[in-house]
Image 1 (spheres, rainbow, N blue to C red):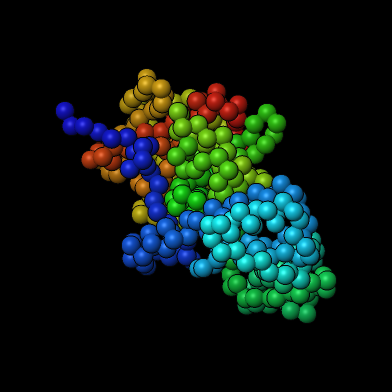
Image 2: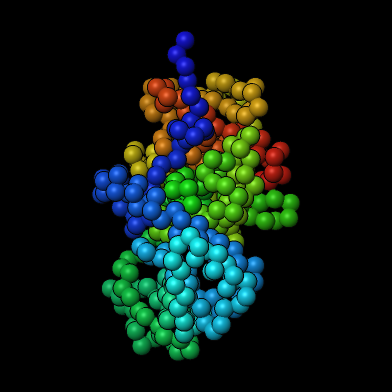
Length: 375
C-alpha cells in the first residue's frame, strides 16, 4: 500500500511562500531570491508586531505608522512616545534596529481628514491612503474620467492627488473592507498565502473570515496581496484545522468565484451539511490563478472518523482538486437561485494524488465556534 501524507501537516500544507516585496507573478522572481528576502525579514516583522501590540494596548493618539525597511523597523510618532511603546521599542531593538521618526500628523488625524475627503469627493470614487510617516493623505482618482483637482477640499493636512487610473473596486487579489470570501490572505509572520473562506459572525455579532487553522497562529496579522491589513488570526483550532481572521473592517456575504483579478462574486445565502455522493466546488486563490476560476465536479466520498473529523472529495475528471495557496478557501454548492451554499473549508490533499480534496465541513465550524454566515 502506498503511504500517504496529509497536507495539513508541516511539509505540504496548502500554503505557498510569498515575497515580502511588491507582489509579482510567480514567474517574475527567482524562488530562491523570494525565500531569502522572506527569511531575512522575519525578525523585522516580529519586532514590528511587538511594537504594534504595545500601540494597540496603550491606544496612544500619537501613532502615525509602522513600516519594514531593508535594514530596520521604522516607527513614526507625533509627540513623545508613551512609556509602554517606548519599552516595546527597547525590547525590539535587542533583535533588530528600530528607527523612531517624528510625524507631522497622527494616523487618527489623517483618517479624520480622509473621511472628510471621501465624503466630499464621493462622486469621483477616490481611494484614500495614508502616508506611513504621517506627512499627508494620498487620494487616488481616475484623472481620465475628468476629476477636477480644484474640487479637493481643505482638510487641515497636506493632500496628494495621484492618478490611479480606472479602478476595479475589488478582486481576489485586491479586496477591501468589508471583506469577501475567496480573497488572498497573506501571513507575513509565517510567510504564507492562503485563501479567505466564508464570511461569518458569532452570537456577539463579531465578524470573521473562516479559514484553515494552518494558515496562521493566534495574534498574527493577515493582509491582502497589496499589503492592506485585513485583520488578526484568531480562534486557532489545529485539531479541526480551522481558524478565523477577526476583521475590524467587517465582512460581506459575498464570495469570489472568478480569476485572480476578477471581481466576479456570488452571494453566500447560508450553509448546509455535507452528504455522501454530493458534488461540490472549491474556490481557492491558487486555482483561480492557474485555471481562472473554481474547481468543480468534486464528489464527496469519505467522512473521516479520526479526531480531525474531515471530509474528502474526489475530482471525478482526474484533474487537480486543490493547489498550494488554496488552503482556507471555500468549498460550496449552488443554491436554486444560483447563489452559494457554504459547505466547508479547504484543508489538505495527498502526495501523489492531488485529485483528492480534504476539507473541514461548515457544520463542524458551527459546532466549534457558534458561527453562521454573516449577513
